Length: 68
Image (cartoon, rainbow, N blue to C red):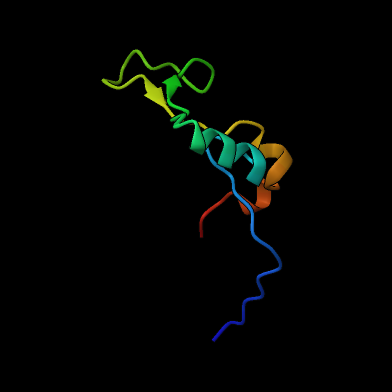
C-alpha cells in the first residue's frame, strides 16, 4: 500500500489554471471550448473543437504529465 499526502488544492482546466480564474469563468458559464488551431492538424478528424489547458508547462512539470 502506498501513502499519499495532499499538500493543497488547485485546478488545471480549460477555463483557468488557478482558483480565482477558474471560479470566475465558471460563474460566467464560460465553457473554454474553442477551435483547435495549434495542437495538431484537425483535417482528418470530425471534431475540430476542444477545451485545452493553456500554459500547462507552468503548472505541471513534464515528467508528471505522463500516465503510467
